[in-house]
Length: 535
Image 1 (tube, rainbow, N blue to C red):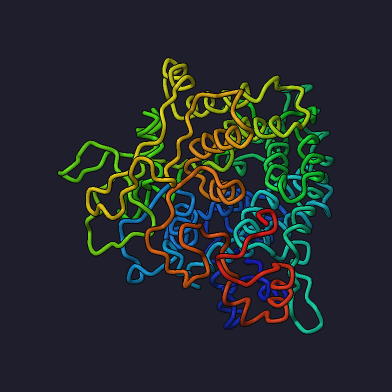
Image 2: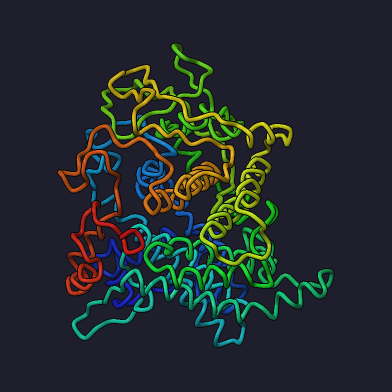
């Protein structure tokens, strides 16, 4: 029988959701890491198969209800991608900024119990056994997984993970320090991975797949993992461009100038695919009927006559507008089942996209707009249009539809709620975007940025964590604010949620650590306080 690794008290105090007993927490963690990819000592000594589970856990794939509480009723909605037709918790919940502690815990628990903990064990064993390719993989996945957590909460535990103070607390690190640690880990991973990429590129036919079936994205391609590393660095560099422009430029140009390149084609998309586990969004949308298209998505996609509409969503089934694509506005009054037959999310199968070549081209467009050196791109327009082209191709849109879209001067369509006109967004309303798909070199820099981010937002679907982060950072796209704001004044009317409050178990069981978090948060622990890169 395989013996599961237990988590010592030091780790448990860091991980949220663990305020009762170590035994109960360990049982809870083990429920996250179930067969066929369970973490065990034999696995660590053997074929590193727990890497597959970590990749799935970065997406928060299971159980489905956990994804629902942690992400689907959070960033999937806050990003403007989706909205629930259900009045959860009496219609006073995270969707309208009444933050529920139990919902806020789930992303944190998964990140520390099912991403950080196994990756730390993997990296330690790989270093001991002189397997730098696995050390590199662990470092990269740690950054890929944990940047989503700091982008959600702000200060987190990263370098201090499992480092216990004399009083039993664990100290939080500022988001700036965490981001700088990300860049260092990417440097270390790149150094360790480079020799393996070189060997693979020099002899592709003789390449040995060290990662094996545990690589759910790239089938052991060191080249593609290196491209993901560079693209992740560029993503994080753009994220801090406003608050720390010098560091952003340094890291961005490091990514853009690296000889191994970035994600450039759809064959290089970072999409987790176990081939057996269905994307939880499909379960929640089609199986449970708990999530639908957001009104902001309806406005943009219908206004643009965007051919990706039918790839992302299903037509509504309500008899009053059957066959049309209809979305639900965020934060509205829901009294019954009146919105359940609005447009559902289309089937996603077993694919869980986390980063694509399309996104990377939009990142390059923004970098070029900022004046960063990129020898592979001549103009901002070139990178911008490549992003749209790659997104169309990714979703199987006919190439013949691309030219008309790139030349389109269409604007987002006013929103009409067929169930409640109080939720309408009429023409001329300042919350309705007027941005067009067609590139305009003569436009002001702010308009160019809005155009880039708007198209990146559309292309990023359904990866809402990234879309929500970019909407907070840039203010684009111009999505509709909630109709009902239950934040108690923490978030001003007409504005958007900025972060998720720290989890309740940390406030209770790691009180000194929680105080250290408040100090580096530089604001109140609520959903209206901006994270560092959004100051």
